[in-house]
Length: 262
Image (cartoon, rainbow, N blue to C red; front, side, top):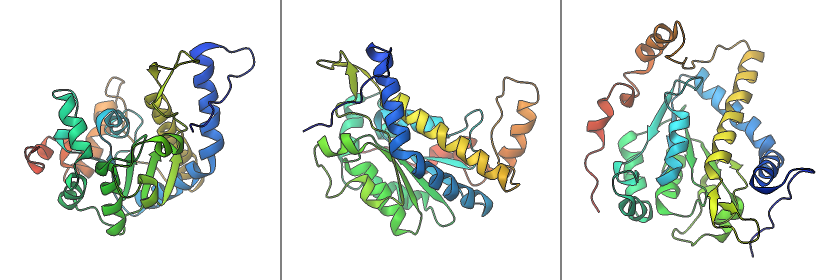
């Protein structure tokens, strides 16, 4: 049975109220874990590690949130295969996420190693692709931060022998309801909320990371918007620092993946 959705705040109705209630639920479930994730990421940054961010289908939107983003952490490498991108073949992306072996092969090619960290986004956390990525990273000694929903995972079809959360060092529970949609309240069929909650989760991690770094006197390597004065100059230093280790920053990542096969 699905968990009951949190009630809207007093005076708030409709979809906005339900979203705000879920944001409150996310804070309650994951507040402590977010602080732990910030601590883990800061250690990685201080030790010159790389954050490998992974997701499939619409969870790739969360990978975009982590990579080459104004205000975002610079040492982030997107960990993805072209076959999981739905923009040119949506049904292929669904098949790819469910295919055994793809996630494991992707990690083997990227070869993350300590002091790196992996962040894996998957609302259900039950398809082979994200589960294999987390499992393979953990086997290499790379800690995994899972951004997933416990409620959605319990209700999802078990397409893998384990769940994403089973292989994570830290689990950030986004509180996304099963099926993702919120509207209308009596029989939800539209207005998915996983992107809102996922982006909020990552922004909370970055805010906690920034506070922790400031308290310890550490300057975080973060991107500056290219649309403000001095942005290009600030980013040039980061490109020089990380370009050789993150080939996707300069286009060299295209040749590292090869064509997808279904």
